[in-house]
Length: 416
Image (cartoon, rainbow, N blue to C red; front, side, top):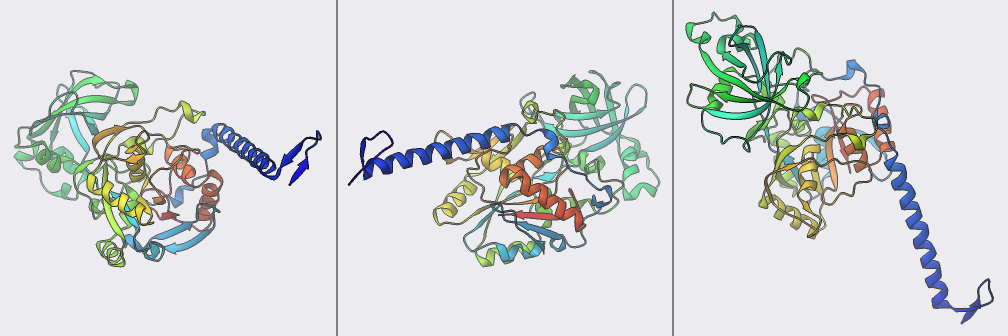
């Protein structure tokens, strides 16, 4: 069979079908290009929302898995209000949860300047093995110091148990002579980036048997700046599956899990594996540039063990879903994707500055458990990339209207 085209030439049915397919391909390509152009035009203000201060959770939920959970389908943005333990109903046999097993270090240290005795504070951010080899009693860290302008290279800060007891429940106990002994010192080595913000390289040393022992005697768990005067159990800012202490902040999506819930999910046939990403305080910072692509993404250390890689490959082969517990797990898994080999590979303490923005193609993660995030943050951009900006903004309006508790100690979202 033949038909005439507009110029009077004869086409076969096969040629006509090929022409229609080509036009459809061109329309699809044009639509994709228009979508990408629209995504590239997004500004930081497009990820802003009015955050009611009264909805910022100041304490954990009385039961980890009893908090609210907003469930959203990523393809259409439909919403359901549930309780977190109902995650059991949404996960299927053969699915795999992947969580960040990192533990928050007691990184907040109160001390005194060695020369003058003036008050000083150090907040440890991440260990720098690349600068100086760690020993039991010495290590180099990136840190935030206060007062930032006065603590210059060469300055030394003394830390005693007496000074740091001012933040602890035992502060009413009379100080003993040993409480005033120097447990640890921090020597400022150099500036980092914006010196006015107090970022420094510091060398920690201790006369005790180990730095870990010293930190646990005088250090305190650092909480996000929007949590004020929390006096509760610091262990509630740790996940129940946390292991090695390396982070300055908790992977908060994991806070909602209990050992009992994890066991129930395993009995259902849901797998549970871990990655390790050392969460820094940059996770709380907003993007200051209006063009988000000009933002300098922070660098974090991460590891994805071979055991987790193997479990993910088995899950994918059998048609199961990989559910990331938190944005740090997302960044770990997506950073471990080898685009040249087109596969996930194991990583051992590598660095990543992966910036996930709308338009990003996810290679590993199929569903996401997360908390509600700070406006104008890279985390808002990440969850918007996973669903869409419009869906996320609609979900946040819904959550605020229904008085969800927000941010680190707040309620959860499940996006699938």
